[in-house]
Amino acid sequence: MTLAEAISTVAVAGCRLVPDHTGGVSLVVPDGTTIPRAVLEVLRAHREQLAAAHATPTVTPGPAAAAAGDLREYLREKGIAEAAADLVVHATRVFNVPGQAITIEHAELEPEPVFFEPGVPILTTIDTEWHAPGRGYFTVPAGTLGLAIPQRWAIADADARHEVEAAIDHAKQQHKPVHVAVWLADGVRALDLTAFTFEGAVAPSGLDLMPWRLPRGAAAA
Image (cartoon, rainbow, N blue to C red; front, side, top):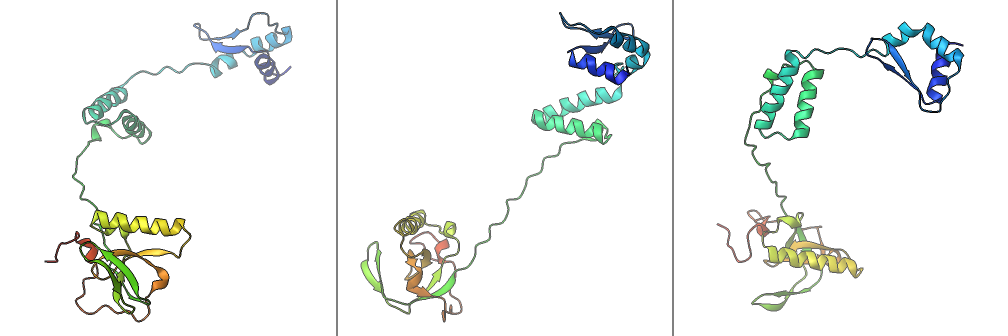
């Protein structure tokens, strides 16, 4: 019987080879388990080899271990979460970085700039009815210049934005033609895609291409 066969037999039987206090190796056998004599003889013949394979290495804590503890305490004082501290300590060990070389610096991050897209000129193709507070219902004639709003979230007036979003959602639920947000006749509204065209629409020089960025009723400076 080979050593590999013996170890396989031991494993199948539920036994374990463990290092003992003498520097050798012991066989842990569960109650009621019988090990063939041939297996025991092979293990005894290779005792030194098995002991070397199962030996527990002795680790003497040194400066690196102390540095890791100091680093963890330093990270804790800096408010670093435990999981993040574990990652930093692990990285210092893997890449052999002295713990004393790790510092935490706080920097105020500037907010990312927000870019607003200008409106796209449109021309109405049919007369449309519109209602405005204080003005009632009125007609916006075909051929009126307006602006398609590319970013609904950029509409500054919350009430107007919610009205437009509700109208767009309602049209979608009713399976009506797609509606989009537009600036038309000095106000924001949801307009059917079939009610306007981009063809031939040109914004005159000096026209404010983002008038919805001002709250309702405010005047441009």
